[in-house]
Image 1: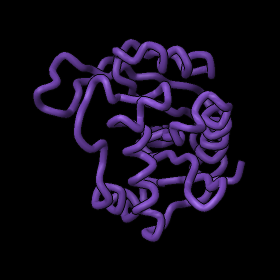
Image 2: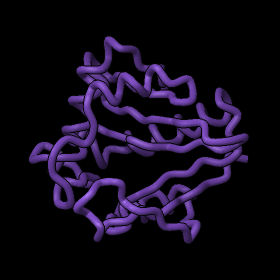
Image 3: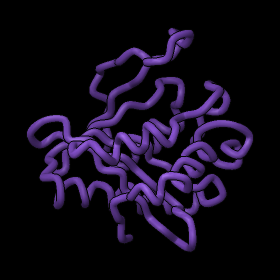
Length: 166
């Protein structure tokens, strides 16, 4: 799977992909959505554009046709540590193995292109099926919990998962 860095020309399609996979009725076509937990937009084009402008952040995508089928964000945190976020697969393509391939390609990119030795992510703790999916791919809960950043959702918290890339 060949990933490429997103550009500003990709922003409308990336935004549409992310929203379709995380929130609203379209997200329910897949299995890894937040639609039952949260409403509203997951992100917006301005936030995605700011990610592109930040040299510590890498917004990667995989095209399988005219529009992106998957995307992911990687952020350099410190020496050897990369944060993985926004792993997104078109809801119609979930459970096809595409997410597994995207995750493996992302880890390869983090290791080879960003010098990562470890990769971490946060997952909403209530999303036990998604956490189990990552655990089957070598991620382990660190025991650390982080607060959810959106006011009015104090019942939610993040579980921190980590994997060695060595």
